[in-house]
Amino acid sequence: MADPGSALERLRVLHAQIRACTGCRLHVGRTQAVPGAGPSVARVMIVGEAPGATEDSVGRPFVGQAGRLLDTLLEGIGLARGDVYVTNVVKCRPPANRDPEPDEVEACRPYLDRQLALIRPRIVVLLGRHALERLLPGHGPISRVHGQPVIRAGVTYFPIFHPAAALHNRGLLSELEADFRALARYLESGPAPEAPPPSTAPASSAAPVEAGVDTSPPPGHQLRLF
Image (cartoon, rainbow, N blue to C red; front, top):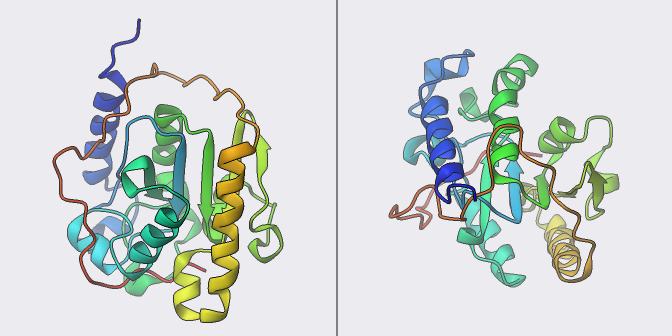
């Protein structure tokens, strides 16, 4: 039987590696890297683009305005933040919240790949065009494919408009809510394929990586991610 704490410990080690990373230029201006947060094994993993100013300050993902909207949307379909693992394509804040450069995305590629292998999600929610392009390259644009599940190698990818998009364009809020309702229907009745085996890590308990840490979102602003 697999050690129930093994995936949790491996994820903690990975988080420590991310926090110490100097693999691209983004480490120069960061306050701290933002590895991710949530259970060490989760059915649902959410991937955004990059940390914003508040995330850079506190070291946790989605704790600004877009994070609060994300919490509301999750609650609306019966999920709490603690039910899902949340991370970003890049783990350090780009200057002035600009889009990540291709070499920065590549520098973080092994970290996201390792998170996917350790957490073994059945559904990966792709928030916005950058997450879509990173994990389903060439499948966009997100305006065409949002709300439509895509199954690859036993994992369902679910592109959704980023909450930050709805904060900048309130006309997108109804589409964002519809995307989450579609996600809820899929969670309830969609196929549940077997997750692919992890590359090096066994399955483990779903203990939260940040156990004991207050994850209530402070006020602030989230990076523009659409």
